Amino acid sequence: MALMIAALIRRNMKESTAFKVSDGHSAAPLSMELPAGESLVGWYKNPPPWEESLVAFTDKAIYALEKQQIVRIALDDIIDCESPPSKNEAVGVRVRTRDGFRFIRMAGSRGPQGKFKDVFDLLMILKVIIEANQRRAHHS
Image (cartoon, rainbow, N blue to C red; front, top):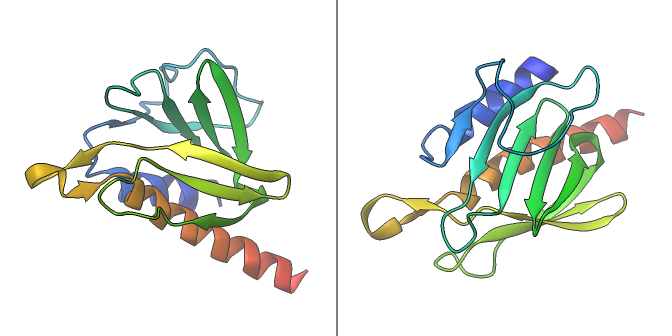
């Protein structure tokens, strides 16, 4: 499943100029140690005024750095997510996990007048993960 997750993330984030694919050797610009057996796929650096907010994707989790605090969201724990209330002002998404809600900031945009919001690329990734988790729970 790790290869499929990495491909899913790279495919959906490839249009974002703020997303950097890991070369397998360098660490994300986060001061964090990954658990054994977890591989960095890439990371996303938010634009000003949120440039201190980063998101790192691994084959097993999403790490959100917000206000010097790193939150690890295991992919297997993601139950649902909320679409942003406004497409024009979308700066992140609330994710529901087994432990409660977590916020992932993804505030960048691209295209003419910033028409395409990066957060919707993240939503596509989350929807696939949520569906896979629901299928797994249904078959258990």
